[in-house]
Length: 70
Image (cartoon, rainbow, N blue to C red):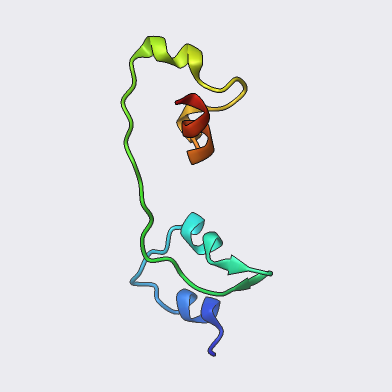
């Protein structure tokens, strides 16, 4: 298999978000490039934030945070 990072860097006409590129790294190598990622928008009443998991950042919520909050 061709060196994937060389292929990515050889495409100046394309933009690959760094977080998605990092998500494709396994064991220190670039194993794949995720082309898309699921993103969700959540709206919550301001008073519900008092139940948000302590010490967590609601602007960087994980799915586990959402489950604990619910």
